[in-house]
Structures are given as structure tokens and as C-alpha cells.
Image 1 (cartoon, rainbow, N blue to C red):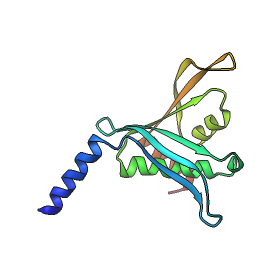
Image 2: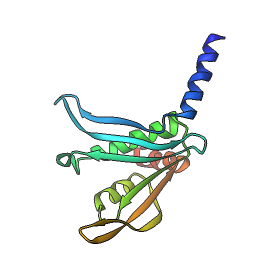
Image 3: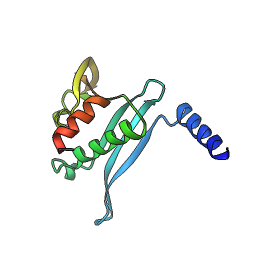
Amino acid sequence: MRYKDEQEKFYEKVISGNTEQYFTISDFKAKKILGTVGLYDINFRNERASIIIVLDSCMYRKGIAREAVGLILDYGFTFLSLNKVSAYIYEYNSASLDLFKKSGFKKSGREKDQIKIRGEFFDRIIMELRRSEFYKFYQTQFNL
């Protein structure tokens, strides 16, 4: 009986809080932190969240970001039972747009003039991936 009470308390805590979960991307051999990947704006009631990844620029184009995105998506869809994960990427960030496209995300919208840099406005692209699409995509990509 006590175990069930603890489970219910944990579940209530998860539902009422924990809107952000971040993980470090590390090179254990070199004892170096390479970046961070995480889910934020986690909404358990509606089973959705947004994803963010920040990686040291010397680690670009080495497959690290794609692996980290795949792992956090697996965590979100499997452990957190999310149905949808969204990514918000500024149009000038072609590397991130490519990363999320290669990770199975599809463009779902565009927010016009979302940020101003040096006098010029840029749009923010919204990309999304649903749980069913994730499992289908990753089974195809990795022959699971």
C-alpha cells in the first residue's frame, strides 16, 4: 500500500511541475561537457514539449547533435509519454533546420519577423514530430 501512495505522489508531482528537463552532452574520456539538450514547456496534460540543443561549435558536423536529439526524443516519447515535440528555429540557422529535418521533424509553421538582429527581422520556423512518426522514422533509419 505504501508503494502505491508513493507512486501517486510522484505522478502528481510530475503532472504539476517539472516543465523543463535538461541533460549535458559529455565526452567522458576527455572529461569535457560538449553541450546541453533538453525539453522545456513540458505539458503533461496535453502530452507535448519543446526541444532545445546547444552544442560547442567545435563539435558541429560530427553527428553528436543528431544522436543527442534522438536520445532526448526517445526519452520524451517513451519515458514521459509525450505525443508531440516542437522545435523553434530561426530561419538563418540552416544547420539546426537540417538537424531537425534529418531527425524526422516536419515544418508546421512560420512566425514572421520574430527576432531583429542588426536592424533586420528574421522569421522563426516551427517544426514538429509526433510519437508515431518518431517510431516509424527511427525504425527506418536504424533498422530497429
